[in-house]
Image (cartoon, rainbow, N blue to C red; front, side, top):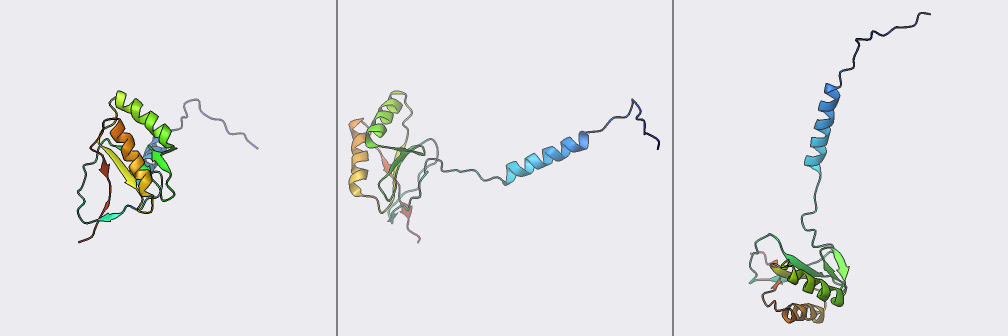
Length: 136
């Protein structure tokens, strides 16, 4: 049996392999879904209103309240004391812009009022309470 000898000039062309890898990478990037509402880490059913107004999207400071009255900020569960501490820190750093409260329709009214009170104690009086727009 004869052994095959390779020429020293023989090379493997990897250009087609690189092309295929780029096409696969592009496919996965384009077909991936990204979480747009990262500030809403809990499932919330907003209350419905006839007089709601559409808000502009952008940098917002959103506090969410779940049906079980759990409070989240930027996707992390917090207590009222932790929320107040982060609020003070973020206000000092001018990071509280367009504050909003996303409260589930089954959340207790008292929890929402406590959060509003935290904002007011820090001098923020223009807080949005988000609602679901009623279908015409």
